[in-house]
Image 1 (cartoon, rainbow, N blue to C red):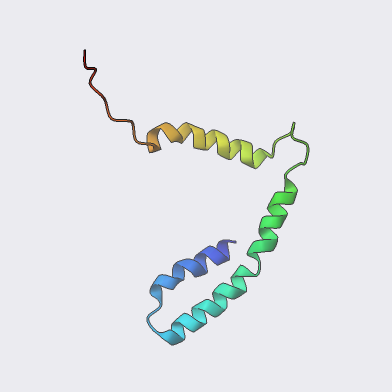
Image 2: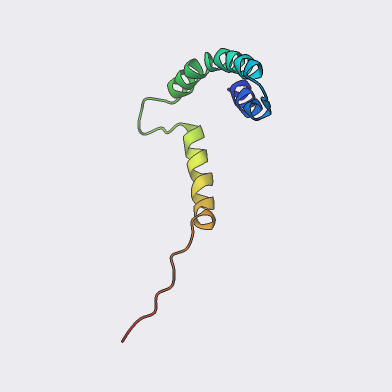
Length: 81
C-alpha cells in the first residue's frame, strides 16, 4: 500500500503523455495489491463485537484527542435582552 501511495505522489512529476502512460502502468501494478490488502486488514479484526480491533481503538483514541484542536470553534453570539 505504501508503494501505491508513492506512485500516486509521483504523478505530479509527469511532464509528457509517455510519462503519464508509464506512471499509469506502474500505478495499475501497485493498485493490484490494494484490494487484497484492505481485505486482509478487515479480516484481521475480530468478529466478536465485544473485542474491538486494537488498531481501530487506538486510532479512535488518537483522533478524538486531536478533534477539538482541528475543528473550528463556533462563533460567539451576543445575547440580546
